[in-house]
Length: 59
Length: 539
Image (cartoon, rainbow over the protein chains, first blue to last red):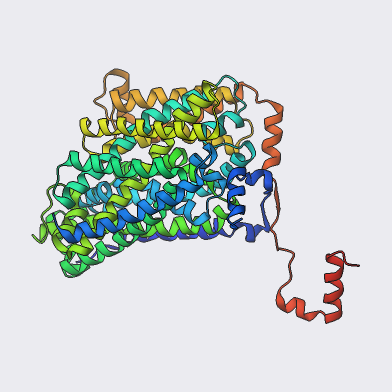
């Protein structure tokens, strides 16, 4: 019996649209050549954590 | 009790215990306890995002809906997929940028700083919304855990609830946010593998997809229809009813906190959205087909199902070798625990951080604040346990009410505050107060999950207009409009408008100016050496 064309479209069309959205957003910085400005103040890692990671040689 | 199932489960439990112990080393401040020091690896943050999002609903509630409704239930998967993507496009990177700038640990921290609210009303309202709805949500997860243990190990639901609470509270207390995100990674893998294995196994047992659809079609042809047999406006209402989950994603504190914790906001774009999106597509297809094919197996007499929400545990116990069943049971419990642990931590942060530390102004030492947070985690877990044992047992409805409350309470103000410089604290206070009160009244007292014309008086008229559409879906947009109107009638401070304009400035992508290897080689060796010397300031 299988599924009708309408049923397959319900399953597949939104899935492909989702993948397309992922690709567009994921590479938007490459497409436009621009990305959000980020510096140490914005990253704002916890100081105690950084000290411990440095002590363990992980930072 | 089956020893194979027990062995599979004990391996899983051992992993959780190890992560809880490991994470305890990095859990010494409030920053670390609630948001992982804002330095959580992108893989962990994004997988934890999805594992926290997809709860017992994914393994029990949703397959149950696919079992009962058929193909039409796929609209919920569509809503969840696009909700996940909307979170990355609209919320993730911008929230992480602001969270870093303001050193925000919780969503109320961010909202208070962003809207420069010195009245503390935004923080109090936020904490109330989190406490009221998140505790119900945590209780729903405990109930789901209890059902799974009952099915897998043959114990009572209440005993299963108690075991769930003890295990997850132990590692949340010990390891805080780091333990929660890294256990979520393990749990996300268990969920992924479970939802790949179960549908394929079901397909092989039933004898192929053609035969499955034949059985389903002869039992109930509406189950093969994309809109459950509805046409016209009724079909649209049917689709919105399921896909409405999408707007809810924008306001779930236990999900968006993951974005605040990630090591670099730019990584949420790539690889973040790819990790989350791909994982989401696979598990939603898997969960849908597990329930859909489970119905075919039930109709063919291959599978006994006492409750549609128990279709996956029933498949595991009745059809799989015991070691594999243990693995699947662990996968279901993973789904429950990965959500419950995140919600427990967020609910506790509302008390320990937002009320005790910030509203009451109690500032103790770093270690003492973490210990207070741990006590609060235990307290919230006990309240959730009480709700789970004494409250209603239908997971889908409980989660839907909590999901709607958080969606309306936080979704509109989070989205507007990240994208609109004119959003004001007055707009936020009125909008969030409206969201909280209206959701409690409309969902708990007047309509329930969806609008209907049988509500009393004027509400019945409104119920007739939106008949069948989930309350929170409409209420989300009403709240959005309320916030916009009040914000337009009031004025935001100039400094926060200026900050908003500056903080999201975009710069050329790092490395965009770098040349390819071919371009570099096209230059002579002398030219390359000269360029290097100049760049390093050696000449």
